[in-house]
Amino acid sequence: MNPEQNRIAAHFRSLHTSRKPLALSNAWDVASALITEAAGAPAVATTSAGVAWSLGLPDGDRLDRERAVAVIAGIVNAVKVPVTADIEGGYSETLEGIARTVTDVLDAGAVGINMEDGSRDPAEFCARISAAREAARHAGQDLFINARTDVFLAGAGTVEQQIAEVLARAEKYVAAGADGIFVPGASDANTVAALTAGISVPVNVMVGSGSLSVGELGRLGVARVSLGSSIAQAAYAVVKRAAEELNTTGTYSAVSEAIDYGSLNGLFAGSK
Image (cartoon, rainbow, N blue to C red; front, side, top):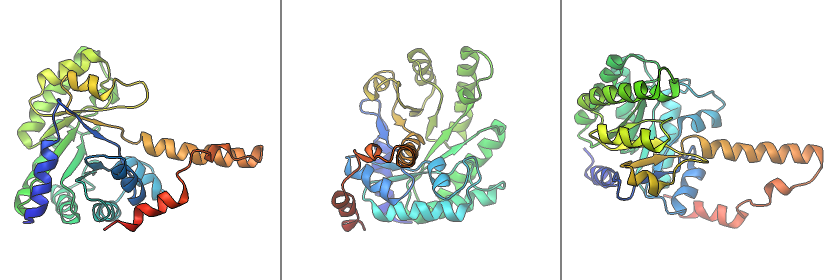
């Protein structure tokens, strides 16, 4: 048991409120985490996609536990705010392996995790959530488990059927030990309002260009918003534009809004 980590975890848990939704700019390495913290973020969340891409892997449970935990530990050691980690499906096909992943993530200092159901049967995913919860109990550590359901991303059925399926899964996931429900793909006001009305724990939605604002989502009952992989995608878009411009026109406008060297380098001087 780490009392200081539990204090941080309790603070992180308290940030989940629709009065002022927890707005998460997802990071994928120490530099992006430090930039996020310096911008005033109350917490840092990792993006599994961004982490995987930065290590030369595709997203989608292709990252292994050891490399994922190493990135999480590096971020925790660099920032002062709470860190929540995207661990995809748990980086194991066994419940014992999932418990090991959660134990390692807690040892790295994270106070929250995201786990996703993907194409898994809800009953199997409930077992994964329970294994994660039990691992945290065994470690004596508070852990905010944000259970992601990909019903809307799959897009099967009508919107009404998708809402009903999310609500049914959310009830099971909460009973299994989830503290929050993450519903990427839910975007319009009516859908979001139906979800927050029917789910008993904090609701997290994914946002991006064109989404409702954080304030608007809060008024609909959302307690947490995440940019997901979109910041990493935008960063890599700059790389693409700069490289293409350099190799076609021989000009450099794509890097005109870069953070200046001194400011960026200075972020690391104060890191832990």
